[in-house]
Image (cartoon, rainbow over all chains, first blue to last red):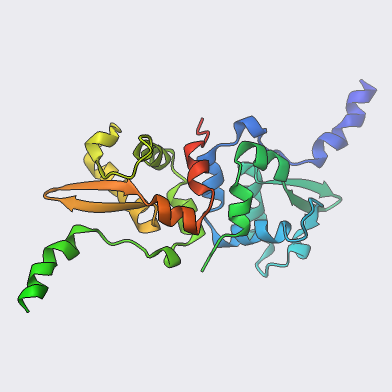
Amino acid sequence: MTTQIDQVPSLEERLEQPEPRDMRADVVFAALSDPLRISIVQRLMSEGDDAFRSCTWVGIDRPKSTLTHHFRVLREAGIIEQRRYGTERRSRVRMDDLAARFPGLLEMVLAAPLG
Amino acid sequence: MTTQIDQVPSLEERLEQPEPRDMRADVVFAALSDPLRISIVQRLMSEGDDAFRSCTWVGIDRPKSTLTHHFRVLREAGIIEQRRYGTERRSRVRMDDLAARFPGLLEMVLAAPLG
């Protein structure tokens, strides 16, 4: 039982997200139907790696509650993974999961003409 | 002047749609954020050609007003073209325009896991 208690913090660390098999195309499209959310995904992929980045690093000038909402929509669709680091949340794009489930999607998002 | 009058019916024939350069990724994603609209696009592409098909041919069992709405959302995003044939509207997917503007999108829609 001690082992289970010890595991609680690590279970808490990653915020809830869908398994790849549960990702739905319509939900993913809905998450990408907002220019700001497309910008977040583009920015998270801009360095070409999958390191976890903070809201601050993403550098989109909106109120924290607004950003929290948009990151949550992306996470619940399966597009990003979020982890808690102390009081901060950091995010990365689930590049491997998305490439397997929706081939070509991330390339399209990266090249997305918004204007 | 007679020539201009004669052209009115042909101008009326194609319903309003965006030019490829005006298609926006966020608007296209929004149009595809509904499982029924994804199904319409999949069905229109199911024969592998770009012939114009009627609502009836698409064969989705919803009220006509509902289908009219969903086809309009797809047309205004640039995903389908609609023409009037007498009192009937027929539609086709703008495969060439979409392939040029959003490479990979139609392949993704065709393969889209919805459930």
